[in-house]
Image (cartoon, rainbow, N blue to C red; front, side, top):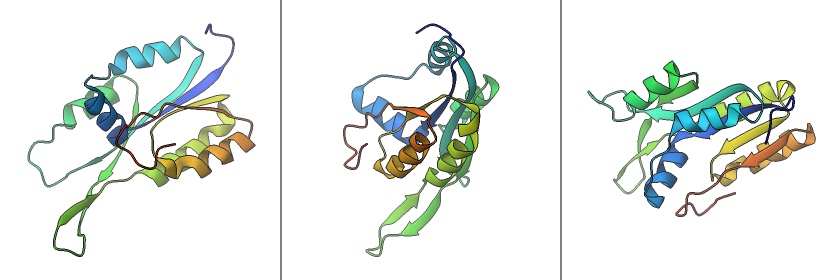
Length: 150
């Protein structure tokens, strides 16, 4: 698709994208992804959302976060929250759905297209709201183990 005055924004649900790539046995080339979408129009912003574990001395996600930030992505993070699932098992809450939804609605008046990389079915209401604002939304869902996929 050639550049034709189209404006777009990328929204990447980091945990979902990582799980999908891992399940399918490949790595995501974020540089190539950014370049590809820049060739499709004016890329207003590329967002990447992920939770981080603050109490860890080394986080395997930190090098990726730093690279994304340095190379033009808007990286949105928040600490993962630990909780007990009621049966004595330790679980972590690490969703950034609200942050992603707010950012998408705020940028909607600046773009024609939004590309969402997530298989999370909780985004259905967001997609409908964006479409009511005449924003073309493309969902790249792919987590084969995600039971509530879009």
